[in-house]
Image (tube, rainbow, N blue to C red; front, side):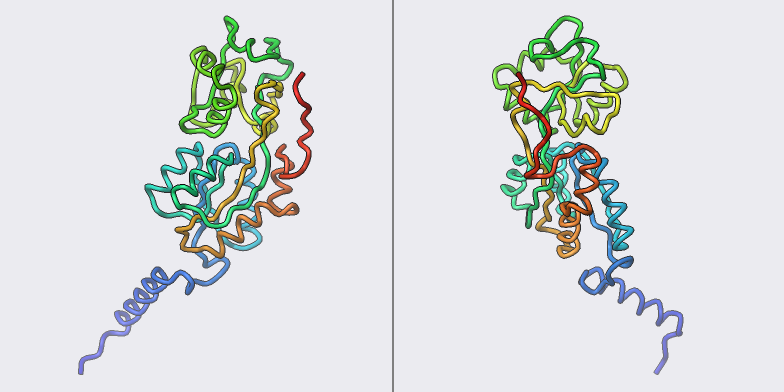
Length: 268
């Protein structure tokens, strides 16, 4: 009987082992050999999650691959791709929608965010109330309510006052970070964003608006039900919510833990 050459035999064995590991992910080694976690992260959480992901990799050896966007945009991407491990949502409706589509397993609330008016430090235009945003010469940026959680939340809270405000807006963009960046660069005079967004842009300050700043939303981390690495995904979202781990990163960037006072006072 003919024997296969040793090199060919080794190649076939390696290929078989690779295919077996792809078919049964639990056979893959933990730590550095674990396949990366694929995480869909809403734009408002981008900076703290990036830092927390680096810390998680340093501690566990597991790489975290992050895809950013508006909450609604991410949900569309998850449904289309039918893959991924974790979804990080900026608001409760994002979680509700994901549940409606059957996308989620365990959900852990992480931090609270409030809608505020962002202006350049010193508030040079003197913007204090909602009607100020419709003044002639005031350039306003809004996040698209069809893609971004902050846009959807502010539209719902303002009700009938939202359409005239939107018609006056100079620019509407897909994410909250986009409009905060425009404000920092001087392209606009004001933007409706999360309070935690303002804390991440040193040139900005928050103005509390009565129709908006009474309201708070919980940003949450959730395991995707279609994850091929459920145990690691659950470990990661728990890491993000742990006060001494991811929670500490969030606090340093101006986020408020769920259940803790926000430090904001009701607008007068």
